[in-house]
Amino acid sequence: MSKEEMGLRESVAQHGRKPYQKEKPFVVLQYLLKHTDENHVATAYDIIAFLEECGIYAERRSIYRDIDEINRVMWMLENGATMEEAETAIATDEYDSEKTVVYDKSRKGFYVQQRHYDINDIRLLAECVYSAKFIVQGQADRLVNKVICGFVSEKQANTIKHDALLTDRVKTNNKSVLNNISAINEAMSKTLEGQKHEPEKISFKYLEYTIDNLDKPKEGRGGERYIVSPYRLLINDGNYYLMGYDDKYKEIRVYRVDRMADVRFTGEPREGQEAADQTEINKYSQQSFSMFGGNTERVTIRFQNRSMNTVFDRFGRKGAVYLKLDEEHFTITADIKISDQFFTWVCGFGRRAKIISPEPVVKKFEEFLDKIREMY
Image 1 (cartoon, rainbow, N blue to C red):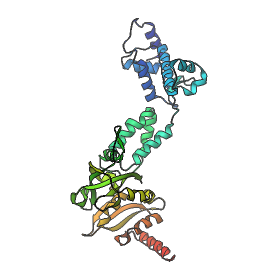
Image 2 (spheres, rainbow, N blue to C red):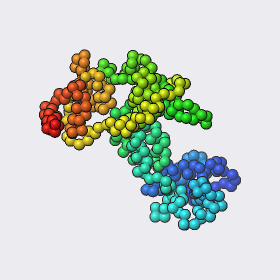
Image 3 (spheres, rainbow, N blue to C red):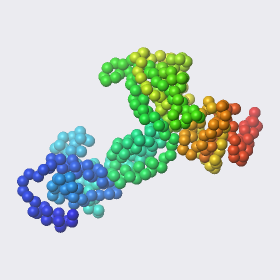
Image 4 (cartoon, rainbow, N blue to C red):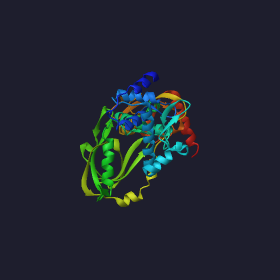
């Protein structure tokens, strides 16, 4: 709709009450939040055209009044002021930097200015969600699309989602992870719904991968339920872990939250407080390695079957090939950045792992071991 058509529309507008006028400022704000930012503006005519699509009549002058109302209310709420104080403040240029909606004279349009965060803050949050391996892809998409990107304009959101989707991490397939985290937190809580609560044990089934079926992990301990007194939730290398006191082995152990299934409350008081107090949490948060640096090689490594969980955690399914070698061994072939950190990781398996190919990588590993032997 052109400016001339808008002007004509205003001049011939019928007198009397127009529908949805009370809702109009709210709709204007939502439109500006979605479509404008410091780099993108909307004119009064853009806003009027959108309102008309929604069935709401508006004149150009009323858009300016709506934006004044939006700025007054937002300033009042954010500053804990009265409406009168907000009206006085918004009327002066001194408070332009505190207005929610501002007018850009050079571009002749309105936009929402963000003061509490910038685009990099939101991008960081989105990247954290996508890089978290304990969040399934669908939940990550929902959190980024519906929650995090709701704080920026549509154009900014498209940029953020494009950047964040470049992250390539091994993701869990367990859709119950967030529910597990909530249940564990409740079990550890000393208050629930305003009432005193004694931290209690939880029970769950624990899933393990095997070379025979990588798509469907089996239940550990033959399906027996684990009973654990939960003490800490830890995030390490993109995974969520529970540190708890195991009822069966009477010691502190760590469990991957995305491997837990059917988490239940037992109603039994938590045990193992002394052991939990003596545990150095840093040991759990630092047990990871880096494969950055070095040239990428397609490497084949032989492992004993009992190492499957650790290997699967590191490489996942994408780009990795698993083969059953015999009843006791399997091999994995994957793209790996060859570095001392990688060789150190292999050494951690002792005789349970052996680099098979390519030959140049095997030679480099032998040289790495020789250098270590020279120190002793």
